[in-house]
Image: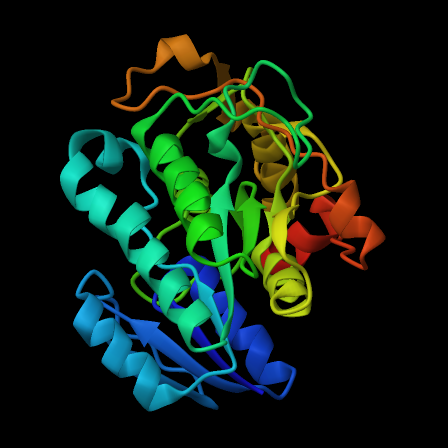
Length: 289
């Protein structure tokens, strides 16, 4: 089974490649800016917003599966750079979905819990979407375009994710660790709730379902938690005083992109199909200790 993973130089894509190698897949990681090296993983550099280049690459790789993770995933960046983010987050995945449909290649797309407005959690796959940010709007638009272009596509809405990162990439957890270990106070939202999942579990879910499940699927964790409580748990595992974690509210921090309060996912459909993410404590321990 040949799998191509876009965004392999980023957080989720890199973790999918790692898990795919462990599972014995023939894996090709598609990168753009961030170089990455993984034993057992071929890499190809491509700007997927160049549709001609994307088609030539897929024709050359000839994968059985494409998992599309490449994205402009910083909501504040998308809010301030809407035209560029539109090419990356909407036009590129829609074209890849069309391309894969034409070539009978299984296709999955990683969307986000930020397609919801935070007023009706927990959200299942049939819940009404109402994104607050440009990033959420773009992911919602991509979902609709993909399903129009490729009726066999899988769209996985992903929650907040944590785990190991490739060199040169910083995710929220690594930023928290750096601040705590440098003696700084970490200020985290008490009124923002998610259903986090480890990147390894997310990768396993995507590899399990791509090509086997079609339509919409939520891949959230089993625990609803605030960023503040998540930070307290991380501090405990790092042996850092909880006094170094300060609680704040979303309204206390001015950001370009508006943030929903609670986008917890109901992922019971995925659980019934065999997705079984570990607890936050157990999975966080694997990352921190």
